[in-house]
Image (cartoon, rainbow, N blue to C red; front, side):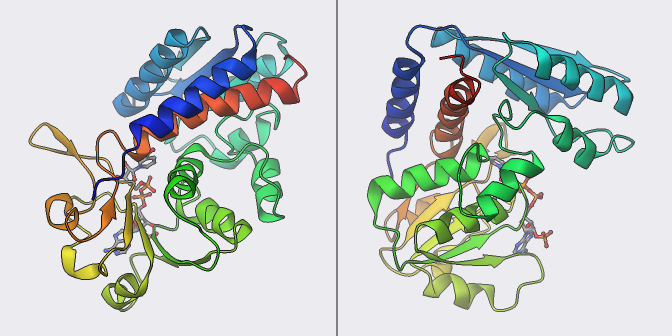
Length: 272
Ligand code: NAP
């Protein structure tokens, strides 16, 4: 059974547009160095924003020092017409990720990566939270009751697994986080009501790792022979479980959640 995600994304985008009340909001995206995937992602976000009547700017800094990045963030923090700031990771290794995260004004932090917004999430308050785990929650809330559910998350990164576990706890689910050193992964996955996989390996989650009628949320994005695929063996799992497709699944909802966060940020700034 395929979980239809495009309509969930559409609903989030349309509500966000409505809440902006016609105000043109601006997202500023910082790409440092020459990571092609970051540039592609930034351009696709810009396209989506323009379609919805918002706008944005990509700051592509090549050969930038940490000081350059921090001073650009400081300038953007101070500008009234900048409603959201996003920094694409990975950063070149001479630039401290922590310093960059800390520099972003928490009310403009549309990717939910600043220590302040992470800290609030840890304390149970979801203000601006990372978009991918937020998208997973939006999909799950649409199709199931989370209270009391056993959820296995195969990923422990700050982008997906850790914030997702906190959001699930906020909703009375019981999350377990697995990673590359986890023992008996198959058994853990087979016992879960919901499996969220974000490993970055095509075909990682196999049919025999999931119980009948479980929910599988596939966060993975991999390119195989020029085609985008997830981390789950989709063809085998779609008859046994409820599963999100790739593409047209979590990624689509994640993009919509970014727009939602831009509107939330603008509200926090008193801009709308
Ligand atoms: P990452 O930093 O490489 O993390 C991968 C995670 O998977 C790590 O926690 C790793 O464990 C774990 N892992 C690796 N091999 C494993 C194994 N054999 N058994 C169990 N766990 C294992 O990747 P990421 O940035 O979090 O992204 C993961 C995937 O999600 C990628 O395909 C990425 O493209 C995709 N993604 C999608 C979206 C979206 O919006 N759809 C957003 C972000 C990422 P360790 O911590 O022990 O290394």
